[in-house]
Structures are given as structure tokens and as C-alpha cells.
Length: 349
Ligand SMILES: NC(=O)c1ccc[n+]([C@@H]2O[C@H](COP(=O)([O-])OP(=O)(O)OC[C@H]3O[C@@H](n4cnc5c(N)ncnc54)[C@H](OP(=O)(O)O)[C@@H]3O)[C@@H](O)[C@H]2O)c1
Image (cartoon, rainbow, N blue to C red; front, side, top):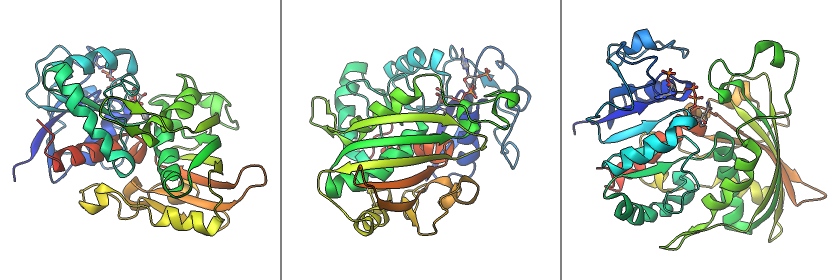
């Protein structure tokens, strides 16, 4: 099978570099085009990009000439890690011109006919593409959630399926790479915790899971009736967002029943054995001091969420810790898994 050529929008950024790293040697996709701002245009990728991931720039990408958003693109499949100030308009224009845009940016996540997709959780939301494609004339946008929401929604999904989730309190401890490069100034974060993250981070965490865990009824998304309260923090960790979650359930469940629901959670990526699918989307850790970003963020190549300290809560029903690799499962990795699901379902142009 010949590989599908893809373009990376925002290719020089933190998420763009992860796309390029994760797509090196991908069995189905090959990076054929890279797009960034006017600052990078016309340079080779090697010249335009300060590469910050282990392993160096993959062969085949380093000498590609960086294009701008005005350049015509040959690739029909576009992965977007564009800065949100430009992503909204650019992604909509690409969809209208027949491209499949698989995006990380927040701009279109809550649109009425755009799936906010985590393939293990809400693959059925791809039904909305039929409606969206009528509107655009053929192309479409599929988004993935905010990086913390990917971890939170994956952890809530098995609980919601088995017991019904009603209320969630969540405190996040978010990694530096979530702010892109250079991110937070070193003198602000060394020896410190910052109890605020801009860009509406708390609002995204309080609103995206309901769309993901809700239903698509052929006309629109019916959000799950879950109330979420969130408090976010930036901490001096390079990669890996940790969350302390407190959950009230519709039907009581013991910590052992909850742990069983986490551990047995599977979805369409596992059934189809998609190339980037983790064997177990959620790993339940039983040690009292896990999960930890340093030890657990790379679980199954960064594609699995680690859950630990599943225990009773006196105010809610359950509490637990969850950890997600924010630039892999929380960004580029989930977007690649979304594209694999689209390809497996025959939905790529
Ligand atoms: N970092 C994370 O963990 C994470 C997780 C989930 C979602 N996201 C989302 O993903 C997106 C990218 O985040 P990031 O952390 O990778 O940001 P970043 O490191 O600042 O990268 C932004 C990218 O957008 C490009 N860009 C900026 N203005 C442009 C323009 N006018 N035309 C074309 N390209 C332009 C930049 O190109 P130049 O190098 O040429 O300026 C760069 O490639 C954001 O929407 C963010 O909210 C990030």
C-alpha cells in the first residue's frame, strides 16, 4: 500500500515537531509538506525550525521547503498544530477547499458539526462529518480536545459508561511543554507553582468533556449532563499533565469496581489494531506513589493514560490521579490516531 502524503500546519512549533517525530516511519502516512508563518517561509525545514525533540529531524523532512498558509497544498490530509490566532480561519478555508483537517487547535472544537474526537471514547461522533461535508462541499475538520481534557475524558469514559458520572472536581498540574516554546519564563517557574494558565484553560476543561462524553443524534451533539469544576496549575515538569480528580457517580462503585472499569476500557482503535493505538488505553497503577510524570508519561509510547490512587472519597464517591503525556496522547498522538481511524473507516479524501 502506498503511503498517504500529509502536510503539517504549524510544523515548526512544539506540536508540529511532535507530529513530524511521530510520523517518521508511520506505516500509512508520510510527511510531504510543511507549513509555518512568513518568518519561516522559503527556508528549508532544517533552517526554519529549532528542533527540540530527541533523535533529530527525520530524514525526508529536513530538506522540505516551508510553505505558508497562502501556498496551494498537494496533500489532501492536513495535521494542524497552528497557533490559535490563525488556526480558525485557515482550517475552515482548507476544509472548504476539500482537505481533511485533523486539528489540535481550540478554534473549531465546539462547532455544531465538528467531532471533538478521542477514538476510544466517541468514534460514533464521526457521523457528524456527513452533515459537515454537505456544508463545506467535501472537506472537513476533525478536532482533538485540550491536552488535559484528553486524559480526563479518557479516565471518565469507562466510569460514565458503567456508573454514570454526575459531578467532577479536578485539580491539574500541567507541564511546561503545554505552553509551547519558550513558554513560561524560567525565573517564573523555577522554585514555583503558577496557579493560572491563560487561554481559557479552566473553561475548556469544564466544557469539552461533556461534548466528548455526550451523543451525536444525527443533527447535533447532546452534551452529557456532567458538571465539572476545575483549578489549573503550571508546574516545573517538562512533559506530562497530572490531574487529581474527584467524581460523584449516578450509581455507587467501589474503588475495585472503578479500577476494573479503567483496566478493561477498550475502543475501536484496539478492535481495529490501529498503528498508534495503545494495547490498553488506561493503565491502572497500584503503587501508592504513582502515577508520576517522570516514570509514567511514556507508557505505551505516550499513548496510554495512567491512573492511580483509586480510592473512596468522603464528599464525592471516588478520587484518583490521572496522567497524560500532553504533547503525545494529549496533542499530536491523538490527532494521528484520529487520522488512522478516519483512514480505517474510509473517510479520508
Ligand atoms: N503544546 C501543547 O501541549 C498543546 C496541546 C494541545 C493543543 N495545543 C494547541 O496546538 C497549537 C500549537 O501549539 P504549540 O504549543 O505547538 O505552539 P507553538 O510552539 O507556538 O507553534 C505555533 C506554530 O504555528 C505557526 N504559526 C504562527 N503564526 C502563523 C501564521 N500566521 N501562519 C502560519 N503559521 C503560523 C508557527 O510557525 P513559526 O515557527 O513560523 O512562527 C508554529 O509552527 C495551539 O493552537 C495550541 O493551543 C498545544
